[in-house]
Amino acid sequence: MSALIVTDQIEDWPFSIPGTKAIPASEYLTNPDYHKLRNCRVYNLCESQRYQSSGYYVSLLATARGHRPLPDVTTIQDLKSTTVPRLLGEEQEDLIQQSLHPLESGDFELSIYFGQNLAKRHSKLSKALFNLFPAPLLRARFHRGHKWQLKSLRFIPLSEVPESHHEFLKEAASQWFSRRRRTVRKANTARYDMAILVDPNESDPPSDAGALKRFEKAAESLGFSVDFLEQDDFGHIAEYDALFIRATTHVNNHTYRFARRAAVEGLVVIDDPDSILRCTNKVYLAELLSRLKIATPPTL
Image (cartoon, rainbow, N blue to C red; front, side, top):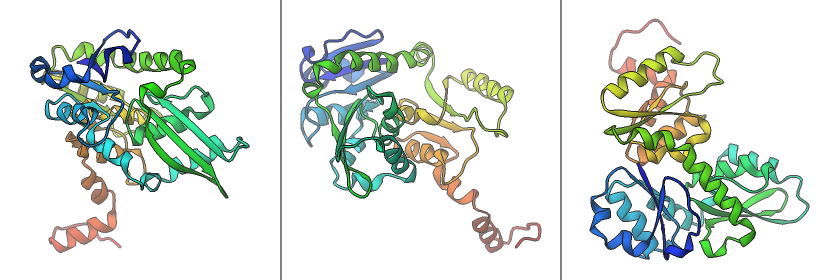
């Protein structure tokens, strides 16, 4: 899968990163060669993502062409909403307090480049916000009242990236694209890309290492390129055609969020979010099986 970095002007992106090609938005939108291109990933770094701007159309047409944009139009619309802070869960709220607790100021600005921040102590928070709102360049603003609160989250135009951050931005982007080399290499011969979600820290996983290897081999024999993802890889979901969850599913952990995001992105996903909601709840199953008169062991 090739990677296109799309900007307003070609000189807006001064970095040369292996496996990527930088092009202006006008070329991506009007050159018919890009309409025909397959197995492509688009990184939209246009200055404006407003409705019907060229940046908006880059992500919109990338979706129509099957190019899997970052950010996609759903993320673009979500970040325009004034309710962004309310979309945070308990996990993100806890990370905000942990990460910003040592600060003495009442306001703080966090710049996130491909899921990373210059300060290592903010790495978990940066990754968490990027996973919720996958976009290459993000800026979060926080204010402290009785506790720290996220006040806004928006895209960072390339023109607003300080020159002192350029080297780190290049490094973060290089790490991002380096992580994807295996996928890029295998996608040349595979029809589809499939992610298998695993949890290496799980003591009793649904599938052991041997079973996972057999799943991978079976998938490849059917024309899939396979990557194994872990909890921190949430931002990569949109790069795939299918998600196979082989970590123990639960409504209140990352497996449900992966399934939900995959379903929104149009991936084929097992277990799908509705099944996780229903089948992990024994009360629901008892009611359903009773109504359908399906025999079950005695239950309370």
